[in-house]
Amino acid sequence: MPREQLDFVLDDRRQVYSRHGGVTLPADLGYGLAAYLPNTPFADQPYRVVAKFPCDGKEQLLTLYLSQVAKGRDGIKDLIELMRIAQKRYGELYDCTPGT
Image (spheres, rainbow, N blue to C red):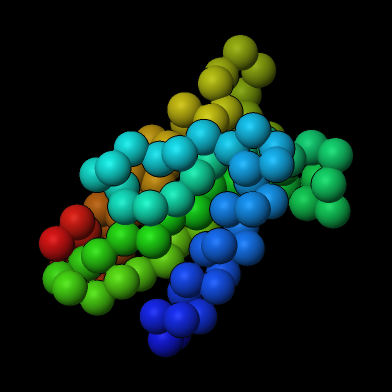
């Protein structure tokens, strides 16, 4: 996907997630947010996280959606950790180093 398209998708999600109290991801995960969007058209999968990150100089975009988290868990914190795992796995699958 061209960089302009990545930026457009990320900016669109950033606006929606920010309106619903989205949390900025740690810098080591790139640029993105995690949010809980229960009363939106996304209510079937309200836990959402998106990140644009470099992997060997190429920008990548990962988005994860969850329909629920276990009772008593911090959904946002879990989304951030799942993004960390997803980026690591992406690097393994595509032979690149996330964050570089």
